[in-house]
Length: 152
Image 1 (cartoon, rainbow, N blue to C red):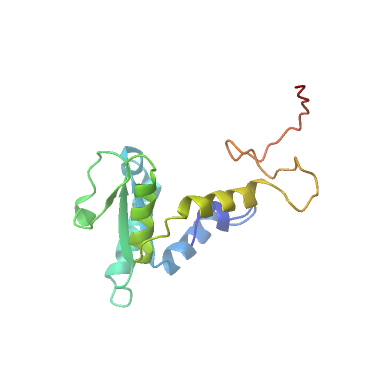
Image 2: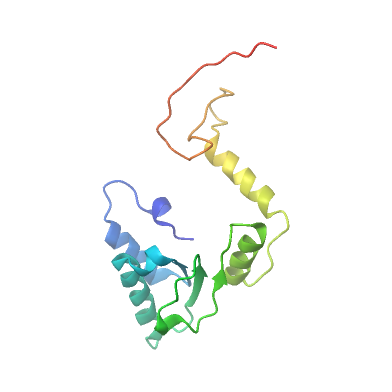
């Protein structure tokens, strides 16, 4: 899986890394909304994938529109069956995973996500029970340590 925030580190070229992702992906999830329809960056990525898909050697790329609002898809891709992503419910996640993998995801998806979340947020290697890598609410890495004592 290629996700820009996971694959691009400080000092690396954003456009070069995005290009690598576009060249090597097998599935292109187009998160479609009013904002996406107005974004030149999204347009460039979409056009790159379409060009790669339509070239004779790359017919196996799957474009999956994930429709976030009522903004119509561009004519060139409006015949691709998309997924109406309504509220981030278990059903929405199920549909996205099934579209990418071709298989029904486990009903334990939330448990797996919570486990991964805890691995990413909490630093279990430090030995400190309150040691965290990121804010549990927003994911910010800008952490300030506070101490609080509760009296029962």
